[in-house]
Length: 489
Ligand code: NDP
Image 1 (cartoon, rainbow, N blue to C red):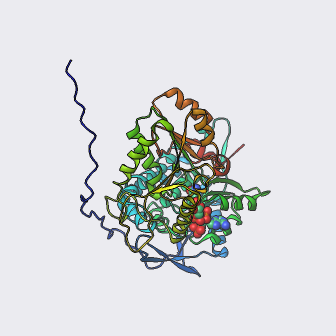
Image 2: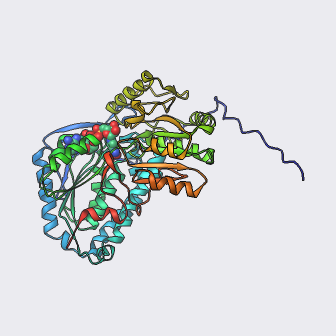
Image 3: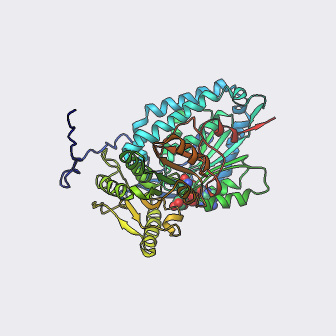
């Protein structure tokens, strides 16, 4: 037999080599100077307003309404009227037609939504284009399919809609979170008042155009913009259900507010996911999963794989491969099609990331950031990895919500499990090994709502998503995501 000559591993791309700029044209997005509140199918002139900006350039984009408690009440009243005067009594097959229409229009206007999402939120256009917008459309398609089959989805349980759902969403996936919330709610026959995050209202406001295009009856979906005060007003208003995605602190405050009241509640809160790499894993693939797990969407992801656990025997190899891969990440203009890591969503979030990173250095962890040129204006943070991290460090305990990874090690599966579960959160986890039995052993014991094996950050509308412990309760996606919008006889 002839000896097979092994080729040496390919050297990394030379540092001087670069891509040509590939900016996505932003002219497709026609912004108004000022937006009102979308209530009862029409735009209400607001009493107060603020300016929304592009976090990549700090350039002002539009004036946005800051809804007052009275305006929130008007939106809830419009939703109540739409619920009682038609929507809840409409046959499921008719409701489904509207959801299908919305899904199709989102697909037709996909580029416009992708550019707007990137402009207002700072995320790379390739992520908005390939993940956020297609998945948002997929959720409307998926729940359209259930609208006329609710009795079959929940046999012998006689499902009925709840009434008006108040929905509060964060800034990391503005359009996708809107779809996660609105699609199951209206498929089940409810009407909705949704509050987008203060920093990223624009895709929800463009979505109002889609609702009009789809001829959705007035009042079925109402959008009220504003900061936390608007969210708090929605929580205390006359709604039948609150669905919230955001920080654990605000989630707890909402739970306290609703304690003892009949308002239904689901909470999708923070996370500090363990991404566990065993020594038999395909390491190059695992490194891609690590990068996707923490640097996707600048790490502004509740299920981000922010705690990396690597088996001791391969830790040096994994760190070397990871650092080399980090050197190829392109940080910069979110609207450039070659950008991998975009802008941090707000100055406030950037300050929070900086504060936690400084605490990691003070506590004794080793920091590494690949050389990269950050733009002068806007909010930016280089992809970061910390080694020599102890379980007790803040960077191993607290949700950073930025492109910052903490690496810890383990020797046995039992140790990996114990360390992975040593967190107040329980949203997601990743396991990398070629042994199926080990995947099942770990998955049975990890306290996390979503577990990926040999992949990370995979989403599908048919698959439920949600957490344990301080990551909240209730599920979104799949049949599980319909149930919180129904009552049963
Ligand atoms: P928040 O929890 O404050 O924001 C989430 C949503 O709730 C926003 O629409 C917000 O409005 C609204 N809100 C704020 N205060 C209240 C209130 N008292 N009652 C009702 N609604 C309210 O998250 P932040 O945007 O401040 O982010 C802070 C941290 O939270 C991040 O650093 C991250 O760690 C975590 N986070 C987790 C998310 C997840 O998906 N698990 C998503 C976002 C953040 P407004 O935007 O106007 O403040």
